[in-house]
Image (cartoon, rainbow, N blue to C red; front, side, top):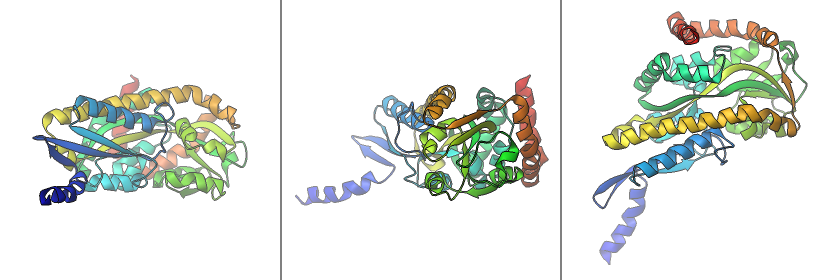
Length: 340
């Protein structure tokens, strides 16, 4: 009886750690955090990534790895989750790449407006040559493992004040931006005001009119229900937004070789699931938002060029000042080579 009592006391403590030994075989638990609320994989790219990763890992490992999902920013915003993974307190998290500049300066490179022409181009850059080197550098610098790095669509401006057709129309408006100085510089270059606010606080900020608008990809505008508190959307596509699924190095290195391989494969499978959801939303999302009452403004190539003429130069100048010409030129060269 005493032995049973001791086991009951110890068991909850065992379940709190990242791995346990059961029937002579070590098993592992992955805590997986992401920002968006609980949705279906077809509704949200982060959910698609997380669900596919979980299902793949648990099936292929025959239960040796369990994945517990923590949506809706239960672990905090992007920066808090990134810090948690770096510290080893969270095994896996999905992080937007641009705010990662708070930990790895070169991440702000991917916040340059007008850098990519398409999602396919962005995904190719992120997963070959330049992107592979970038991922290795950030892994070495922060002590993390990059499981996936992919585009989640082009970012567009929304607001609740007036229809926007040209950069002049946003002057004086206040926009919520990511917690990144690059995003702030971009909005200020348009003559607007930028307020950095975490994603999980954005809806309330717009609802209470603390800000006039925000900027996000179509998928995020849908999943965050931005259409409930914003009337106008302009498809300017200023930045190709990207996300990373990152894992704690301490946890990754604790896995035996066969489980590392499964985790790596799951990252790729999750990335493809996320890309599919993003692609579907890019095709069908505009109609959905219009049905929800948003006024959607489409720009010609010439009109979009007018936006970039105002925001590209000051943003690139800021980035070059922060991380140097060599880093910027290496990415621009990679993009040129990709287009050949």
